[in-house]
Amino acid sequence: MKIFNPTSPGQRARTKADSSQLTKNARPLKKLLRVKKSNAGRAHWGRITVRHKGGGHKKQYRVIDFRQDKLNIPAVVKSIEYDPNRSCFIALLYYKDGEKRYVLAPQGMKIGEEVVAGEKVALKIGNRMQLKNIPVGTFVYNVEIMPGQGGKIARSAGNSIQVMAVEGGYAHLTLPSSEVRMVLENCMANIGALSNPEHMFENSGKAGRARWMGIRPTVRGSAMNPCDHPHGGGEGRAPIGLRRGPKTPWGKQAFGVKTRKRKKYSAKLIIQRRKRKKRK
Image 1 (tube, rainbow, N blue to C red):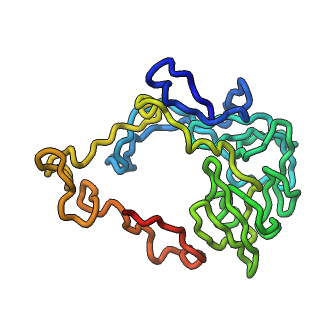
Image 2: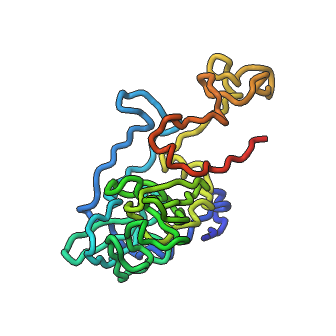
Image 3: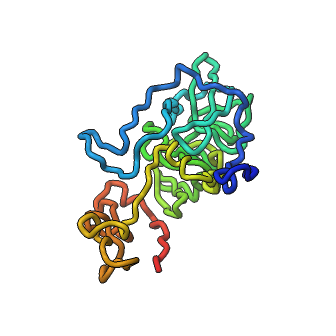
């Protein structure tokens, strides 16, 4: 972690993750940039569905190759760059046939290394292969749920999934949430763990940095009026009353409510549910 000198109140508590893995003075490839429109938490019909969003700095989206479907074609790592749209770093690959693509960068990846994707390739950090050919106990990331669909799980900073077993046409995986689930053995995954593992320990230092990221202030329900929130009203600092637990502004339970669909198609593939901490 990088700790800043207390030259101002905003710098006093600020900490930043180690960025020594990044390539100095690297500029994003223009061909792989797209315009990213900010909807400020609004859905396609124009209503706010996610509160406390708005403003923020403009961003350009980097097109990431989550599928890595160029099989058995080696690629050289040209640069490792920062991506404002995700918590981990990204790597720019130059393929032997001349094509250039962005992929998620794992820990330990260096400039000039050669990576390749295929059904069965060398067990090397950054390489991508089918789960059935990965030894038990190996850590992987950017794992597919359906073959050919592209990586869906373990895509954020520092995350990785451990391969526990391969049997009966399925691979047993332990997810970062401690859930154990089965995935088809012919799904693809990258070897290693994702970069920037210290991201979770960062301290922005001041409220203004949250505004730069498009996060607006949150008002406590207890500071509102009764017509605006179930926690509102009362003289002084009042508790939430005789309710079983905290409520949303619309009167629904805020904590401990399962939102997963009971008949979801992938429920039968879960061997062990994630461990939940009991709230005091």
